[in-house]
Amino acid sequence: MKVWNMVLVSGTFFLCIFGTFLTRSGIVSSVHAFAQSSIGRWFVGFLALTMAGTVYLILSRLDYLKTEARLESVVSRESSFMFNNLILLAAAFAILWGTLFPVLSEAVTGEKITVGPPFFNRINIPIGLFLLFLTGVGPLFAWRRTSLESLRRNFQWPLLGAFVLAIGLFAAGMRHPYALMSFGLCLFVAWTILVEFYKGARAIHAKSGENLLLAAVELTRRNTRRYGGYVVHLAIVLMFIGFTGSAFNKDTTIEVKVGDHFALGHYQMQVVDLKDGDNDNYSQSSAVIEVSKDGQPLGTMAPERRFYKASRQGTSEVAIRRRLNEDLYLNFAGKSDDNERAVIQAFVFPLVSFIWVGFWVLALGTLICLVPNKVKFQYARLPGVRVTEKYAATAKK
Image 1 (cartoon, rainbow, N blue to C red):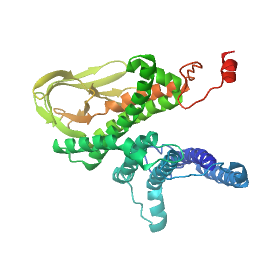
Image 2 (cartoon, rainbow, N blue to C red):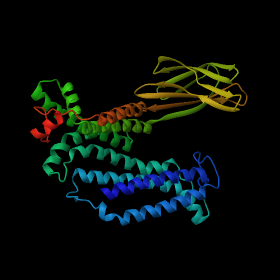
Image 3 (cartoon, rainbow, N blue to C red):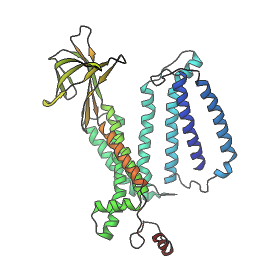
């Protein structure tokens, strides 16, 4: 995949420059297009020259980039890498097309057609689910070729568990098809990762007598790149759980006076006070809101609206109640025209904390990959690796 690497590295660079061109030229109307200047034409010229030069260099050196090996089977770990590349390219093209579509439609028809979030969700959610599936099947495929018996043995229980989970969630009342697929795939991928750890840890446990947890740590230390990569895969699963929670987001915007009640999902809220304050830096208005869930008091939350005197700009200080299962956001958007009612925006974001948990697991997996392998030359050698006595003596020195 040498040509793949060169093309993807070059494409990444060009898209970064192209993104800078979009934000500086004003060609696309967006909150991200923060400036308009004549520098945009310089970016276009730079892109044209560098793309032409890169294409020439790659084509003129194809003989040096030829692969020494060929893809022997579609059902192999090499093919999973290839499909991963193709799917990521499809996602990149879909995002690029949606971003440029208003410009292209205006150039062709004279009418600018705006592309919103529904387009990107419709295209990228299936792409994301397929990438999640590849995250799970990759470790189950063998290099070069995978036999049907191996596929049956490795896929049987993870797929059954994913199917049972989807059926259970459907019976519990969940009707969102993509959410059912995502939760099922999350279990499938997590199952395959944990099985890989369990198999290796059990082998070490049988030889050394260590408990499975310590054996799993020892296993990871012996092959940090492989098992650190599995930890990264597990982080992706956690993030996808957080992404899937967005299918069940709830929000409401309401004008309320002191003493009024309002509800969102399982939460009941009452505005108990509206306060105003002032200091040398900013003036503020805040709403004190008592929150309960299913009749159980949870305390008070106090979102604020601030107006900074020096910059003459207003900002919101959102009150957040963070929990692993869901977050509650309350935003004080301002006051009504008669200055007697507060405009409150309430949001419930299920499972969003799993995104942040996944980030820390991702960081942990990356650090594990950077740690050198621990190699024992006498008794506990890496599975599948033959270390000669001559090499072992040299390494010890």
